[in-house]
Length: 191
Image (cartoon, rainbow, N blue to C red; front, side, top):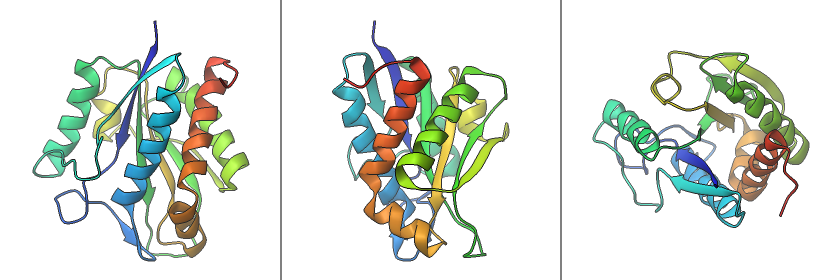
């Protein structure tokens, strides 16, 4: 039986509620969408996985505000039901020097924690991002309300020029790094 992975491309398209961050001319919703599409294709082409995306098209809008947008994503994953939930995001900070990748969890010492470690290692190795660590944030709705191991990946900082350039130009590399991290977590060889 295929492992079901739900890829949540955080935020709605620009111009809708819950559209996410913007920095250095790069829009979070665009990055999240495209990295999710690439990751979905990689998983789709691997018979060991079944994948669903929260935003299968660039114009998909979920919910009418932040709360209903998050609730819709969680409901989609829980009702499938997914075996794993991965939410893709980009970060922003008033200080443009802040950079790097973080992965957020509901709880340490869990399957999500081990998967996050493999994904982080792969992103650092393949995309050259700074490792800002695996962090606990049990207040995040998508981590708190999903019924399967869940992680939220902050790929990088749109407010940092170097990260923003990678987020704009290396979207496939981010997706491939996450895919390899998932394979390493399961102990699978690439197909």
